[in-house]
Length: 199
Image (tube, rainbow, N blue to C red; front, side, top):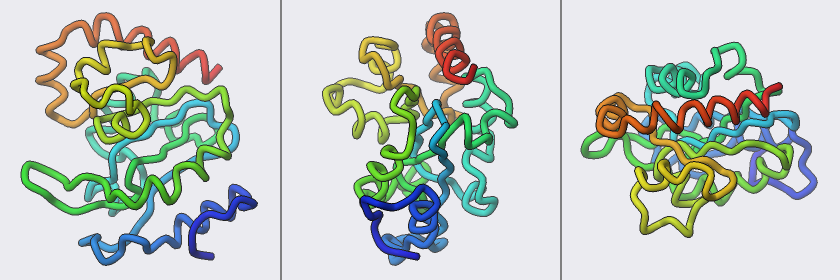
C-alpha cells in the first residue's frame, strides 16, 4: 500500500503507507527508509529532526548517542522509550536526508505536510508533545520563529504544551554548560511532565 494518507486509514494502513513512501527518493542518498513509531495509546510524542546514518541502518529511532542523552533528559529508559503504547516518535523528516556543511542536511520539507496530520489524528488528544530541535519548533511554534532556540527552551510552560527542547547532539553538552538553568530548572519539570503522562 502506497500513496498519501487517506482520511479513513486505520493506524495499520497509515503505517503501511508511510513504510512504502518514496516521495523524496530522488533526493535521499541512502534511499528511502521511513522511521517512525506510534500508537493510539502513546501519550508522549517526540517530534525530532530526521534519522542519522546509524538510525537509518538500524531502523530504530534515536538509536545513537543523541538518543541516550534524550532519554536521560526525559528520565526514562529504553524499555519505556521504545514502547509504542507509551512513547510515539515522529520526526520532521522520516528518512535520512544526507549530509550538509557542518552535519546532516535539514529534514526534507515534503515529509511533514504529507504525513504529520494523519499520524497526529491517531494519537490521544491529551498527549505531551516534545519539540526537539529548531525544525520541529519552527513548524509547531510558528509564533516564536523570531526567537532563538534557547529562548524557546527557557520559556518552558509558557506555551502550555508542546515543550521545546534543544537537539541532544554532542554539541548540546557545550550548550548545557553555557546555560546551567536547563539542568537545574527545566529538566526536573520535564521529567515530571513525562512521568505524569506515563503513569
